[in-house]
Length: 406
Image (cartoon, rainbow, N blue to C red):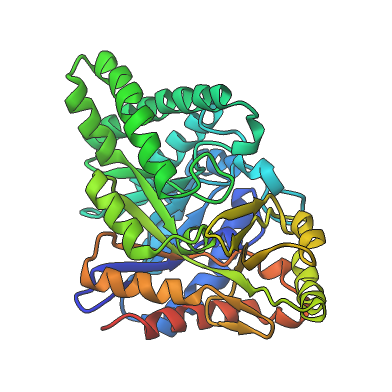
């Protein structure tokens, strides 16, 4: 739905919060949750959907007249799709996901084929005059590569695959008139973890290597090819992920602006935060409070800030907890998407303030119009935090609306 003083933002929530890797399950969830939300917030105006399609669902949606029937349902209910989550390729609920969420990565034709399929779906659904975005993995998962030369090979191969994807997005624009952008989503331990990684990847790999490949393929200049890449590939700024990396929103936005890197989508999400106390008793209490969050489905990377200004990363909360009693760290930030409308969890806090800061910066300079609430952890939250899902989604919308003017 359109929000903001001039209706300059499109707000939705990501349907990755619902289980379902096949289209019938996805559609059933949409029919269950979307119409009541529309009735609650904008009964007489269009309501936007942030659609997550696993690879099987994307294939099924293009079979027969399934896509056209979905479009009819959207039109009948005054709904529209403007953004897709193309990060998780396969299963995302009720199974061990962990680092497999990055597979296949951007070195592979499987990732490219899947993303192109999503782009074709989005182009068919996207309203006229509106851009559409697809968020995707941050190239790959860094711990898979033990040597820097292996990481460089991954970056180069991925740059070529991304350039090939840009060519398809250009063709799709020529065919349909729809502008689709691909938004890489940095997160801790991804090949793109933070703004420094992003800028280095663009300047050292994507633009020179990918640009040269695209220029040769299309028989255009490298400069022209790089312009096409910057038009069609940008960043998905997840407020949880950048907060976990201790990056200040205004600095990140300015760095991307200076580098000419577009922000295609902002995912509104909050991370867990723990201020480490010196006493053994306080640390034991903190550990007991954190243990229910160390669940087995998703990776929950931990970034520790130390008094000397350095940072240490643990690949998962379950790996970090044994170090809690002895670590010299001052603060932990944990990649666990907690409800955005809660700031204090006793002992623990959230990075809600970063969301507030980003929303204020956007109002002053609307560098991105796509806003997507992305709290996908409802099923794995500690028992005392689990509430009715519909009511929880409503509370997330209400919180965002209370922090956006208009």
